[in-house]
Image (cartoon, rainbow, N blue to C red; front, side, top):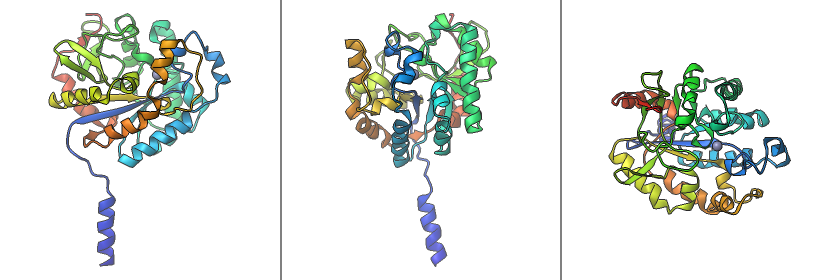
Length: 313
Ligand SMILES: [Zn+2]
């Protein structure tokens, strides 16, 4: 009897795998001073002058994810891995996927194929050494994988990456490929070139052809939550996975303020106090939450149903 009760209790503690729409939560692990809005104001040489907040912010996110029993993909910046050599392993041991966000958080427009390759491999080797696991995925800083930087896809393929999540199918002054698909697909730098699985962030199409970025970041903090909710519902209705993205600093209202221009200050520091409660409202929703690496076969099969998309097309 005692044993039966024990077994029942054990069964109740087992994580259940709910059915429902596939959602991939992703976290771009960088510190508050790495952000693109600070480019030109704070140089990488000045990063040391700012107190790091990333470990405590990641810990807060890990607690939140554990509370809801959700596992995620963490795109960790190599610079963070270098400064905090135990952080990636700590995240991985909590059950999450570790992927790469590059090393120095420079938009790909500022890199050459050679300097991008060095930036990519540095992060890959650091993260693999620290976790003892293969890094399969990549996300470019500020979604800067666009037609002008399409060569980066060939570097990713050459380095053995299994997927990319950097091509945002929206129109934006700094990034975006509005014509790119809103579901998983095979991407190449040129027609008939080598391909890599692309897993794009969530957009909402209120009208055919009008794509709104609702996957996270500033849009998550600045727009009413129902924008993201509409995007999630549409993705579920279309049977597309919903890829969301957040940054640890977005849940830290007490971080030091950088000397940013007015619009950048507004974009960066609005909505920080409510971000955690908003994320909780999303996380508690029943869905098939999964790290990207765990559903690669499913994503590959979905991508194979459509012709590949060339950024040079
Ligand atoms: Zn970033």
